[in-house]
Amino acid sequence: MEKKLEYLEKYIMAKDGYVRLILDDEIKNIDSLPEVWYEIFRENDVKKRIKSLLGVWTEYLNMELRNVISYLGEYLENVELMKINRRHSILYTIRNRQGKVLYYEGRSPQAYFENEQLEESWDEIPAKIRLFYENIHDGFYYYASGAMGLLPLEDVAYLGDDDFDWSIIDDLEESLRIDLDTSFGFFGNGMGTYVAVDYENCDKDNATLWSAKDQPEYNINFWNTVDEWTVIGFEA
Image 1 (cartoon, rainbow, N blue to C red):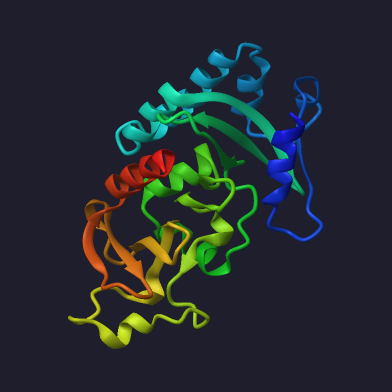
Image 2 (cartoon, rainbow, N blue to C red):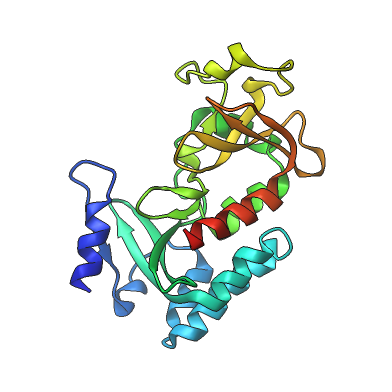
């Protein structure tokens, strides 16, 4: 437990931040968790907890994230309630195919928006993406990097933000086929590449692989890419 906490503390992003794992008998005294989380952590058996949690994933995005759900079903060893500063999350302990232990964080669904541009456009975002954030997690990603997964809402990249230096625009081999002002990067690989959705052009889960350095890849399927890349992250 001490080694795990040392690891978790090492990667807290906020200055003077703190992290702790919530004991089972404390959970009932917290009044801000999703109702289904109380049901999950009321279960003492870890395997039953995992089954119950993955049941939530399956209920909402069984087809879209089928490989992620399948992988977690096979390699997820534990789920624990965690508090980082003011937010609650579920800490996923995964022992991957190579035997390496990985920690993933899934924040409480849409607890804190803190992303003005995205909040203003939220109703325009495809329904399945909103389902994930509103019912499963506010992001699900590798704890140490905050990447290789669906980003928390506060970190979803608004591509039209002037603070971004999209130098690739000057070197495009063809005309830009998305509107940056209506585009958001929901999945990040931690190295400046996003699986982005232009909500004005997202029929049939249409998305774009967007990067500051590489030519964009248009007309990729959002969920197929997110599903595949998340599993790649598990295996890294």
